[in-house]
Length: 173
Image (tube, rainbow, N blue to C red; front, side, top):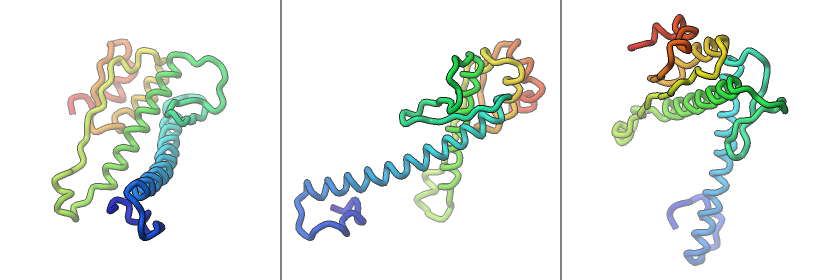
């Protein structure tokens, strides 16, 4: 029983393997649940921050236990454009949180860590602006270049035009 040393402090001296495994499972489960609450709260905060910058109205978002993105204060049917903005806010929140976790673990102190440097992957999207109005396209365009180290988007000309003046300085970089 070497996996969860802290769990063993509470164990009687003589316990079978099944009892030890159960304690380890309980310890890991409790720790996982605590961390999940923290991560979900951080993600919800980031999604709301991004959503408030992208959306021109005032709405609050919650993330349920199945990680579905919902509104606190909306009971009516949402438009396709609003769904797209909500999805963007969620994706950008995930990417922001992942970048934060990667950069917080980026230390040069341990020789073993040097083999496992953080890896950054591009954010790839097909027609991300197709269901958005011009104001939402512009708001999302302000945030999108900061979301990931590399963003690859395939857009139609009509969708690119509202974003071009904001994003063109990032094209081909």
